[in-house]
Image (cartoon, rainbow, N blue to C red):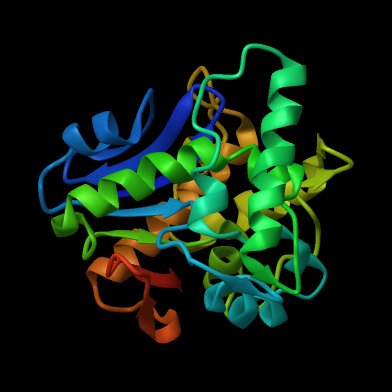
Length: 250
C-alpha cells in the first residue's frame, strides 16, 4: 500500500512516499509525473487547494473558514483562494518581474469582479496559482483521481496530529525559517509516525526544509485517510461546478 504527502516546492513538487519498502522523499517536476510514479491506488494528500469556486465571499471557500478557528495565532497561514477565473486568468510564462506584477494585477481585477465584498489576490496566493492550475486541470480531466488525491493543509495537519493543539511557534518569521518552529514540528512528527533520522535529513535538491516537513505531515494524513481515520471540513465535502470535492482533510 502506497501513500504520499505532497507539497509544492521551487523545483516542482516534493513527495514523501511510504510503502512496504520504507519511506523516501523525492522531487518531481510536475504533479502528473508524480502520480505516474505511483501505483494506481496510492492515496495522495497535497498541500494545495483542490476544487475552486466560481464566486467567493468573505473568508474564502468553506474549508478555509472552518479550519482557521483551530489554529489560533497560526490561522493566517490559511489564506483565501479566489475564483477559478482569477486563478486561470494568467497562465503564460512570466519573462520578468514587470510581466509578473502585471499578471498579478489582472488576476486581482478578475478576483474582485468575482467576489463579494470585492477582494483582490494576495502576492502569496498568486505565487502558487500555477500549481493550483496544474492540479485543477488533472482533477477536471481525470475524475477517477478525486477519491484518492485529496487536499490538506500543513498547520491543520499539525493541529490534528498534535491532539487538537495548534503549533505554538511559526515555521517562518518575516520570510525566514524559524529553527525553533521547525524543531517543534520535527519533535511532533517523530512522535506520531516518522523516524527522527529521516526528519533530520537534508531535503532533496529543489525543496526547502519547510516544504519537506510539510510533506511529511501530509504523508501521515494520507496514512490516516487510507485507514478511514480522517475528517473533512466541511463534512461531507462540498462540490465545485465541475463536481470536484471541496474540503480540507485531516
